Length: 246
Image (cartoon, rainbow, N blue to C red; front, side, top):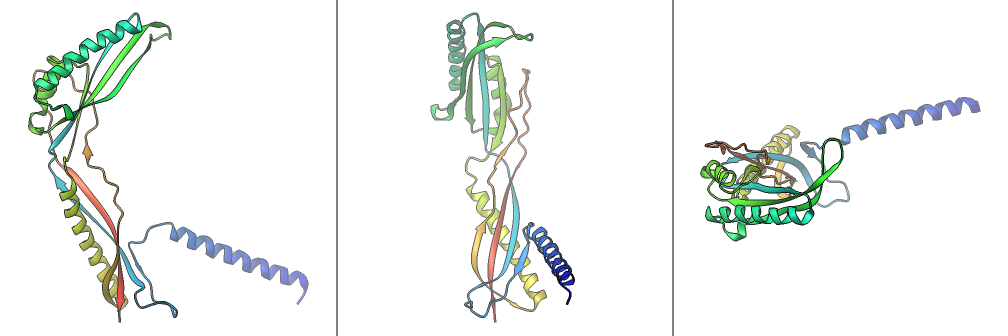
């Protein structure tokens, strides 16, 4: 064979191999719903045969409101702004406690004192701000609570979101449903492949917990604030590995 011809053949073969490798890499980027494997000549009978993903969503009514509330002050000096803020914060905290919020459910989420700039970039004094994060356990009275914090507590910034005080029960319910979903998918795939689904050999939770709804959007001062509670979706995703029998 002529030397130049050999070079061309090798180049074409390498190019084909690279194209196939790239194609397999693209396919591998997506997480498969179900994966079947077969034991190799050197592997044990306990090797994984079917890997399936499962998902489930459980909806629950929130039982805890997270209320963000703040006061701020502006003065010609930092000390004057701080003193005025302390007076406003004391009034707000007193109102919070009068509403029945326990000390353990009152957290300082932010405190700042700094220069205050006008729209044209000049300094016209100092601004101080203090933010609190409150846990409110009676979600049905959130609207009245927000009104009291603004109208009697002097809050100038306020918002609310909802969550579950203890999401473990909802997580467990969703997890059981997700595992059942994975088993159904694996069984369908095993049946299509003509094999018998074996025991579970591995379970992995793929979820990213997030059980909070509603951002801290500003709530306007109103005679009676309406805050619908709605429901939370607790979502769980799992991956379950099954052996193949026979």
